[in-house]
Structure formats: C-alpha cells, structure tokens
Figure 1 (cartoon, rainbow, N blue to C red):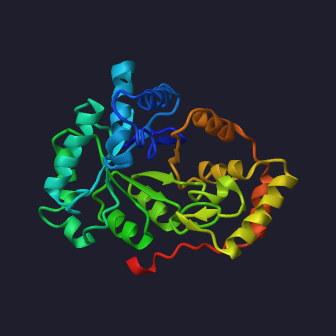
Figure 2 (cartoon, one colour):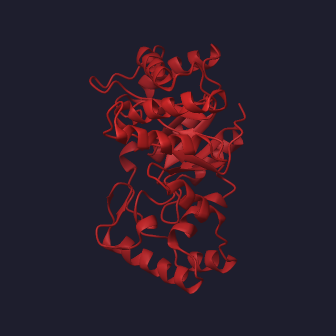
Length: 305
C-alpha cells in the first residue's frame, strides 16, 4: 500500500483531554480539530486511547461539520484493553469498532498496532493475536493499510522484519539527539513501507531549549544532554535560526522519513508548526551539527533486545 502522505502529519494525543461532551472546552477542541482537518496536511494522527478516547470523539465532531472530504484524512491506532491489558485479535477488532464509532466513519486509510507492550512479540504475531486482527481488517477492506507504532528499536525492528505491515511509526528515536531508528527506517523503506517519524522535538528539550526541567523522551534530560543542547543552541544563534526549526528540519530533510508527526493540540499551534516548516536552514548548520559529535542520548532500549 502506497500512502500519499505530506511532509507533516498532525498528531492529536492531547486533543480534547479532560473535556466534557457539550462543554465550551469541547467546542474549543472541535475548532482546533476542524482547523487541522481543513489544513493542507494530508493526515491527522490519533489513537483509541488518546485523551481517553476524547481525541477521536472531538475529531468525529469536526468530521461531521466538515463533511465527506474529512473522512479519509484520519489515521488511528488500536490499543490494548485499558482495564485488562488484553491485546489479541478480538481486542483489535473491538478497538477498531470503538474508533470508527467515535469518528463516525466506517473505513480508515491506515490503522496502527499501538504500543504492544502488554503482550510479547510472539503473542502478537501468533494465531489469534493482535496482528491477525489487523490483517483481517485489511483483507476485509475496512482499512487501507496496517502499521506498527511504538518506540523500542529492537522490538520495532522485529515487527518491520515480518513484512506484514504497510507502515511504521517510531517516536523519539530519530532526532538531532538520537538516530537509533535509522536502520529500522531504512529496512522499512526497502520493503516499500511508509515511514512516519514522530516527536522530532524529543518530546521536550528540542522545542523548549536547555531550560531547567527540560525533558527528552518523557523523562528528565541528563546534565550531559543539556550541555550538548546548549552547544547546539549557540550554533542556532550564530545562524539566526531557532532550535525547534533545526530539530524539525532534521526530520523533514531526511530521505529515510516520508512524514514527520508533530503534536498539535492547542490554538495557533498548527500555524506555528507551518512557520517552522517554512524556515530556511543554512547548510552550514548541518555541518556544525555534525562537528558537535554524537549527542549523549538518554534513550536505553536494551531491555527489548
């Protein structure tokens, strides 16, 4: 399956969080969703468990207002049962039904297996496992393609090597700080898969800078990483470009990446993202980034090896 993606895919993990149906807060979230679905970007990315289902519910309201043109622009993910952790074929089918009910659609262009950490790789791939459910949805025509979305590189490499999937999404493993996803992305491309690179800002420090309390991959940045980012900030200042722009363009310019997924859940954020994407980064920045040497990445996926 060849998915016609744009350079940016808009993520919605925080969209609608803690909103109540019919509330002013929900209406504000629907306005954001409407903007995302009306933008020039091909796809909006969500998941069954984002904001406890509210992300999909809000997107569904926006789809209802925009009409049929928006129905094919949402990518979602199946998730394990939030109460039991079950993640087998039956749970995948239930998760899909929950998603399509919230969105008000009966078909999705792409459906990912999301964070399959409550089961082993062997269980997911076995008969009656989660992947069987995804294949069934693809073969029945209810989804255009299937993907796998998670982070640990040893685990993601195994899923990609199966040859079963049409797409892969990995977060926080292909940034100016950590490039451990590169071999998996290269393998996926050789297999004809669509490659999504999520969280180009490292979920924190590459957007906020080296301020106190900065994070990378959802945990506090180490002093060594903060010091390295401070050196990169000096490079950015010297060339009059912003750190977030450099971080974003690191992904956008890579031949390994088909689309970069960036979270957009607050008013004005999509416009800010478009401005970053339009920024021009001098070639000298990339040379000076190389001269800094490898960043002291805090990511450790060894327990998945």
